Amino acid sequence: KNQVEQSPQSLIILEGKNCTLQCNYTVSPFSNLRWYKQDTGRGPVSLTIMTFSENTKSNGRYTATLDADTKQSSLHITASQLSDSASYICVVSVLYGNKLVFGAGTILRVKS
Amino acid sequence: GAVVSQHPSWVICKSGTSVKIECRSLDFQATTMFWYRQFPKQSLMLMATSNEGSKATYEQGVEKDKFLINHASLTLSTLTVTSAHPEDSSFYICSAITLQTGMEQYFGPGTRLTVT
Image (tube, rainbow over all chains, first blue to last red):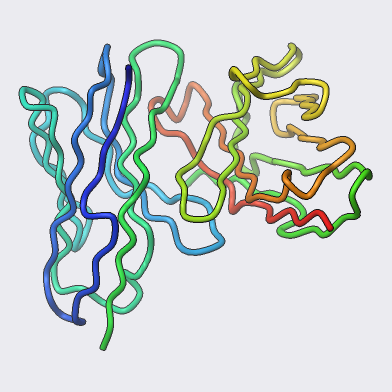
């Protein structure tokens, strides 16, 4: 069964600190892995997309890693800001058919 | 970048009535659009996939007669919730892809539906 699991479920950090969110998946056949940021009451916004051959990809203060052998990914946020407070969703795309498998998300709260 | 809009952003309707939600790709032609539903503190659940000019493909457990999808053009898809019930209250999100966007699936801002 195709599944994406994220941890932790929620996280509270102080402004300026770094944090790392985890994602494990069992999706086959694998096409790519995406990280999205979803603000409350808004649609998801893409942060990174990584294919099988990519180990790391950055987008500003966001850096995603992918280990296709262990089927794990992480999203590292550097120097967090209050505006980083959101739900971060790990999504794995199934090869063929444009089907996406969503994780439940990690709710991040950055406080001052 | 590719922009997807939804209208309305929120709607309140009475039980038994129908409500239509529009999803538009503003600056590209979407070959495929997707409709998702998201309950509080849960992730997105795919409801159906629609291609322009053809019938939508519904996920298992989604009633096609209740959730009517019309993909009339390459820039517009509509979701009509018929005979709405309070349990249909949810956040509905559409997304769109096109050959030009490759792997990228662009999401709309969502529509909050509350059925009273």
